[in-house]
Length: 397
Image: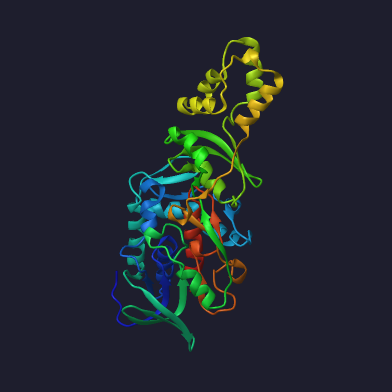
């Protein structure tokens, strides 16, 4: 990383995460004198922990439909101009081995370190300077420049880019700094909350499901007219796994979740046929065939389904089928920002240019990545937004 000869820069980027590093390299290659500042001791901490340490760095099927925002059309322009294929080309130029786990979801074969090393190498080649362990004390704008006061002195730049993320995973250094800067310069910040986050349960249900901690099964989880067919994991604290994380972004406190435990089966038809063919068979036997053993056992005990199927009337079968295909759970809440993968809400995109990420009423001020009110589904979409929004601003500053 190149050393700076003075405290004046063309571009200062606050935040050395995915969006900030991508933006720094893009602007640096255009000949801009770029400085990235971050209060953490190391860059890209969330990159390193993502995807179980393997970094789900993009999704080949990423499209605007995979993002939540109060202004849904905002993300279209940036995503169209910097696609998953563009990022994949960069990954392959650096010789990083990768694999497609679920359809479209690309992970490093080895380690998330490969993606961070690639970004830092790009910044190095582009001449962008990165300073860690640097706290921001204040920001002012006068005479057409931004002045950034840090714990180690004052810096100035023509353009200022805010890439310091949201509130998720505070142990990684997340703070509300980006929102404070937005408000300082007159931008609206939409209400924030934890997204892609596990659910907690009320004590009674938590106790009933406690023996199932660690058991995963494929389900279809629905809430507020959205549904996701992916695995659900029972934990010591509640419900997690991809289906729960996905639906959490659409859940509001007090809402029930509707979980289809057997999304591949027509339970009513199955039970009617089984009663006819093997009247002595039990629900426990049926569940054991289609659910993980411990899950089938616990669910059977929960509802006391002991009798042979011949003793159940049609109305009973309707009720049982309903319970299995529309198991209704009212979460106590979520685990919050502590374990959330992303922050929903943020800087109102109606005050930003969708082409450049610049604030419309504040010259040369830009917001990129998670700090903005654009949140992706699970599966590499949030990284794709980081890359695309970072490039959009980097091409402009």
